[in-house]
Amino acid sequence: MAGKWKSEELEPGKVLETTFFRNPVGDSPYPFRATHLDGRRAPKVVLSDDPRIRPGVPTQVRIVAVHKPERSDRGWIQIEYVAARELQLDGIYLDPMVTRKLQVLLESGLNILLDGPQGSGKTTMVRAIARTLGMDFVFFNCAAVLDATDFMATIQVRASDSGAPVTDFVSTDLRNALLAAVAAPARRFLVFLDELNRCPESARNALMPALDATRRIFDPVTNQFVSIPDNIQFVAAVNRGRQFSGTFGIDAAQLDRFAPLQVDYLPITAEVDLLQKRHPDVPKASVKRVVEIAARLRKSEELGAGLSVRATQEVCVYLQHPLMEKADDGMLAELLKSSFCGRFSGRWDDATSDAGVAWRIIEQALAEQAKKRK
Ligand SMILES: Nc1ncnc2c1ncn2[C@@H]1O[C@H](COP(=O)(O)OP(=O)(O)OP(=O)(O)O)[C@@H](O)[C@H]1O
Ligand SMILES: [Mg+2]
Image (cartoon, rainbow, N blue to C red; front, side, top):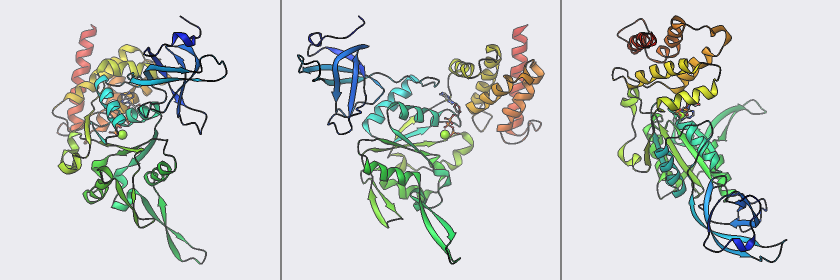
């Protein structure tokens, strides 16, 4: 099977898998180029301008024609797009259904709203998928927005040469991305609006025309409305942890401009695998105990918030340190007290607070784990 395809083997209609990359010939009418088909070298380059192609993502194609088969120095292979294979990302767990939906939504250009608890991997997942799809990832923290114009520019005050104060507009990453997208229509930008629920309602309302068919936003720098080009796509994230429920202020009209997608914590086995890969020196049994206790806290109806994957990572950081090499149950309890209970409101020794409830659940879980090992 190995080796190079012969032109005559590539009959029209044959379906094969290939991975396209951006065509290094900048002014070519075909922005995508591949060199292999089903893992074997193609006799000529495979070229396409199909906008559904994502650089770096394995794609099924159907052969249409081999142009100039007789020439060894010229010609090209024309294909038809069939489908993209599902994404697989190294070091990142992706829920198969969430990934499938996310890929469809990204390909269709719809705005997406990721709704998931604190530290469940929303930012990690979107950043990784954007990279795989060859999109530029632009991170924008909506929690820092006070005023509608803050999406596009912030005002900085500085001293002029004469010492008098002057104000300057500083373009935000969102505005920079809009300008870059207009200048480079072949590039695709994924603008990640993090913590969209944490900016004031009025500012969010001003963003709405940017998210519907109007696709316009007011630019305070030029004092004009600007159009948002098609190669900009928005993905917003909201954190609907129970303690935020009162402030989850996104109303129905705003929500309706997004395709909502629910994200949850990783399954226990996936989180154990992930942490084990990142902290290979920590015994698997210890990682499992930590993740199982985290899962109990996340499930608890009594607690007002989730528990981030950052918390289980942090415990592994402790456990892999030589100082903690001989961590016994008492030591593990102390680590969970700071890394887990410390993320809830109140104190571990105040049974009426969330931290106190978490501590009770942790103690109980540790006792059960100890009993099982006997
Ligand atoms: N599915 C996952 N695959 C790989 N790493 C993950 C995953 N989920 C979480 N993590 C790890 O957990 C940490 C928190 O993830 P991330 O910041 O993406 O969560 P988030 O949902 O965006 O959090 P927040 O709600 O605070 O914005 C990251 O350091 C990441 O390494
Ligand atoms: Mg995030």
